[in-house]
Length: 395
Image (tube, rainbow, N blue to C red; front, top):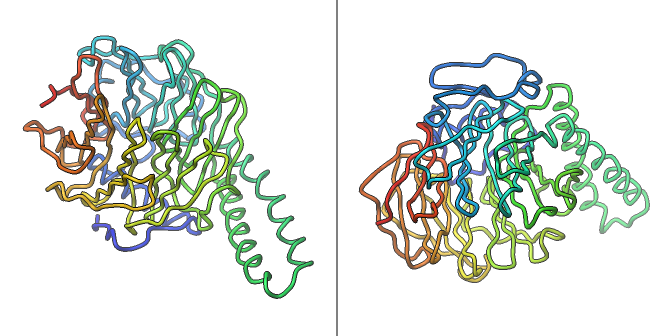
C-alpha cells in the first residue's frame, strides 16, 4: 500500500470507492493491516453486514489477545472494545479481563462511560451500543440503516429550504446558496447510495456529557446527538461547517469546550456543549486521527499521520507543532492523572509528557499496532492494539 502524503487533502464523500480505500488505509496505519469488516488474526467473517448486526459476539478465550480498538476507565474498571464485537472489562487494573455479552459481531471502534454503570460504544455499520451495568451486558440503540434514514430526513427539508431561498433571492446571495445546495445534493446522493448498499459506514468515536446528552461521530461527516440517553438520535449536519463530508475521527472535552478532529486537517470547537460548532484555523492539511484535552481546559493535543502533533494552549485559536522525536503515526492520546499526556504510535512507541505536551520521554517498552491508551486505577498505562491489551508501569 502506498504511503499517504499528509500535505494532501484527503478524500471527500463524493466517491464511495475512494472512501473505502481511504478507510482501509486508515486502519492500515493504525493496526498494521487493512481492516475489512471482520478480520481476526488471519480469519475472515464473510457474513452479510446485516447478519453481523443481528448476531451476538462469540465468547472467545482469545478475545483479550485479539485486535482491540479503544479502552477507557471509569472508577476502578477498565472497558476495552474491538473486532468481532468483543467488549472486555477488568476490575484489577488490566491484569485479567472478562468478556461481556454483546448483541452484534461488528468491529467496535470507541467506548465511553460518563459515570459508572452507564456507557456507550460505537463501531462499524453505524452501530451504537448502550450498557447500564458497567459494561457487563449491552443492547443496540442504533445502526447504519437507521442512520441513513435520519440523514435522508435531515437533508430533504434542508434542500427544500435552499431551493425556496434560491427562487427568492438577489444575485449577490445566489452563488453562495447554489454552492450550499450543490453540497447538500451530493450528501443526499451519497446517503441514497448508502441505503442501497446497506449499513456500511463506521462511527469512529463517542462522547457523553452525562447519562443523557452525548455525541457520536464518524465517516462522511456523520455527527449525531442524543439528549435522552440514546433513545433518539438526530443529525447535526446543518450545525457544522463540513460541506465536503470529510470524516470525523475524534471528539473530546477540554474544560468547558468540546473539540472534534478529522481528515483534511479539520478541527472544530463548541463552547455550548454542541449546540453550535466553530471551525478552527488548522495548522495541518493531513488527517488528524484523534484529539485529547486536559481536564482543566488549558491544553488540547491534536495528532495524526507521520507523528504529526500540535498543541494549543488557548482553546484551539493557535497551534504549536511539537517535535517528539518519532515519525510513526500517532493513533491515540489521553491526558491522565496530574494532566500527564500519553501518546501511542503505530510502531509501538509510548510517549509521555509531564508538561502538557511541551516535551516528551519515550517508554523503553513498545506495543506495536497500538490503537488506544488509558490509565488504570493503580497508575499503570494500559494500551490496546492489534495484539490485544498490555499494561505498563509509569516511568
